[in-house]
Length: 322
Image 1: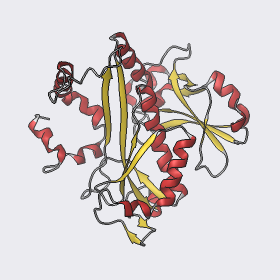
Image 2: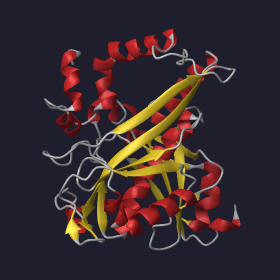
Image 3: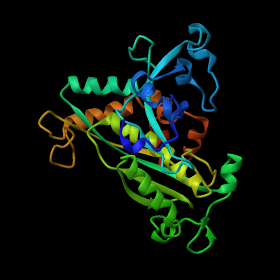
Image 4: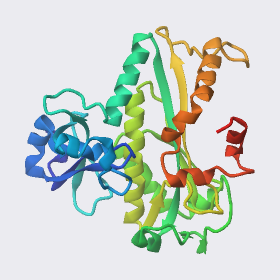
């Protein structure tokens, strides 16, 4: 194992469940070599937990299977550091398998791998970038686990209670936080790009750079959410990626930029004019046709639907019959 990780006292190994929450174990450094080669056992039902970390008895993964174990194997050769931890600690992203080593079908990362293979069979490569919006909260909100108070801008001592979209001043007042975010992203090889102050007070967006590895892009998004929350806590703040933490303030979304390259590296959506290629029009038509059943993915929680209100960007869903 790389010498740069010898100073860590512990390591977190985790998988992402179907809600995007991280589930796993904290392991002493002495067990790292075993973990990296043999993985860690977790109940396969963990993948299907609800958003609060409890079993969903109707998903067929609990009593029907005897709550059987799966094996969580690391997806990268080495752990990464956790710069915001109070004591030296590393982390290991893993993926669930059956005990015989075969892929565990419900694991969301396994699902994405299968989708990418289907593109590969067609001679296509997805190029993906994500944009993640979040609110910064005061420390009391973090303590109560409920978004209440808005943070104070250290630069001018006022609470971020007014809309100030694309404001540089808003970010200047939180320079320490965003500097730590940049440094943590660099330490974990997360390709964070631009940072902007968004439409809600205390709401920000950080974009990822494009990559032709869709699975890696998803890994970055998962790890980035943990990073933001960890750095926020280190600065006596809270952070939430909830779709609608405040009823009367702008909601937060996760945008996915998506294009397809053929084997020659050409963008198959680009026709050279504003109309786009026939492939692009088919792709858009497919998205519209399957939008209703896809809402389980796009808006998986009750809070998600609080974004869909008359007069907002999502009011257009009414016109689609959704």
